[in-house]
Image (tube, rainbow, N blue to C red; front, side, top):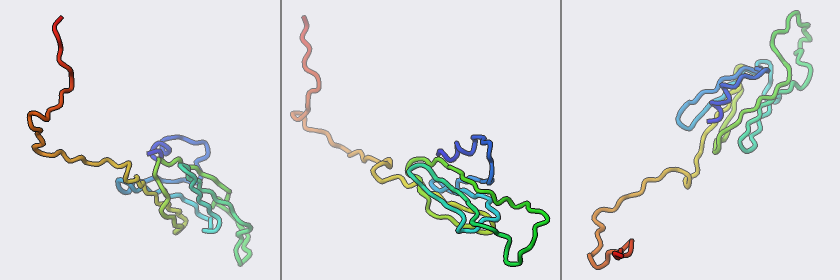
Length: 141
């Protein structure tokens, strides 16, 4: 799957950090650490074989108490991360819990593309007169 190849490619910008896990034969999960972002500040878009995850802070997040930061270690910069998906992989769900965005993916191969077993019929011999000749008789020269 292309997601597996993506995880081996080194990129200059590695923020936000993420994991890719194969949870079953046809199921995958991307987990991204997006601490400091609200659900409304995250956007997921799938177009054909590309999944784009982006985050954009909507404004001042100083909070209701108007606190002044002495140290600000939780990154709040905008980001965009792209994942190339294999054919027939679809996003089936996403959730933001405790600063982790989990994106569930499923590979759904159409029935007509799945391998199918062809039964071999037993004892289908033709009567001797019904045999078909594949090659013509060879004549000696």
